[in-house]
Length: 149
Image: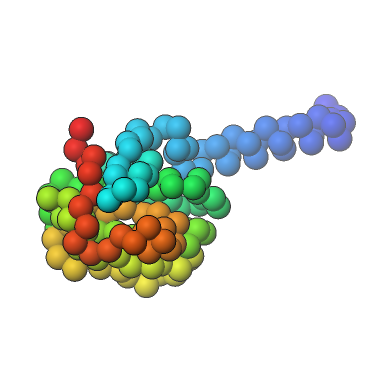
């Protein structure tokens, strides 16, 4: 059977869409969202509460809406470490203890595999665009509201 160029082109396109669809991270619409407050600032976060969603995080994304980020929720307070492999957006991460107090905030460079640690046992981590916390005057010791529903 002889296939025309249009047929081959269409078949390749369908194959690539199927392949890419299988490898792309879960979209923001698929993750639950929650509104948090820190001082007088509100932020909307996608909630990554399973091992798979925590592992993927904001990887393979190229943009992040204003005042939006990701909340990582863990089963128990523990030392947490994050890196930026396959992450293209410069981020700041706030490590948060079980009582909602920010332990420390670290800036992270895109695609950098350096490890950023919490300064104590953390139950949560919040990733926002780099500089978001500083621009709002948010720092260690501030309390995050809305972590639990």
